[in-house]
Length: 102
Image 1 (cartoon, helix red, strand yellow):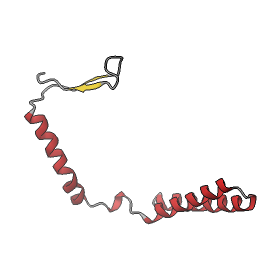
Image 2 (image 1 turned 180 degrees about the vertical axis):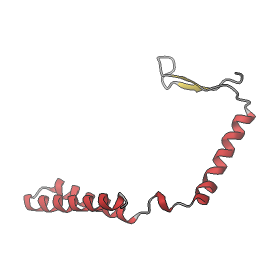
Image 3 (image 1 turned 135 degrees about the vertical axis):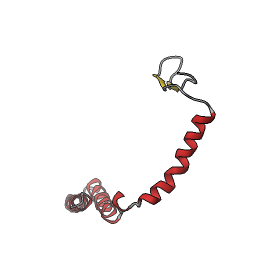
Image 4 (image 1 turned 180 degrees about the horizontal axis):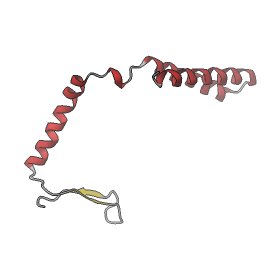
């Protein structure tokens, strides 16, 4: 059994319970959370999972980006291993450097 079915049913059930509890106790937050849970449960049940993505479609989408990255590395003549420099006071975002020689 796929995980999406129990997850969707649990979300819908929790949403219904929260909505009912919020309606009985006049708590708008519970009603909103319940409606959100119901909506998310329906979305999970209706959308396809990754089992339905064909390999050819994935390859057609990913190949141009892979080729582009290889061409960048080739044209910049990058040969060394990447070095990560963590953030510090002069470089608040850190950085990744790839040397041109080993």
